[in-house]
Figure (cartoon, rainbow, N blue to C red):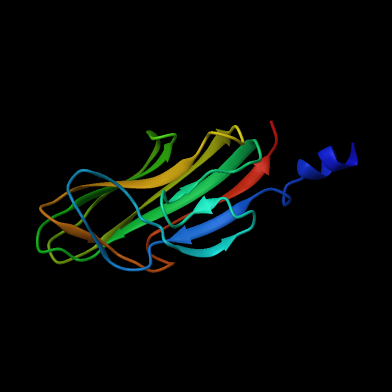
Length: 151
């Protein structure tokens, strides 16, 4: 039908961009990133209040891009970003190592199939440091995604 065809055209699916709004302390373990700000969420399927996850209602393949920024630290810091699907690591981003007194960013990008009902995606980070803080702001720590094609 015409409606089915329109639903499968690129540009008619969900798209979002969510980001951390302020500096957040993190521990040297895996941390789900609290993305509480939204630049846009075309289908209102990104949860920026409770779970900080994208869970679309339209099945298909999605392109995701993410970044995690850490503030300058007094000690060397190792930072990794991850895109998780359904609570498990799906794609590991850049392995970033800082020198004392500097910060930096780990980026990650991938394409994932989501079933349109139970599948969800989150941005996670892992650090090796005594303490660190995620840099907030829409250009520093974010996750965005867009529907690219049907099954």
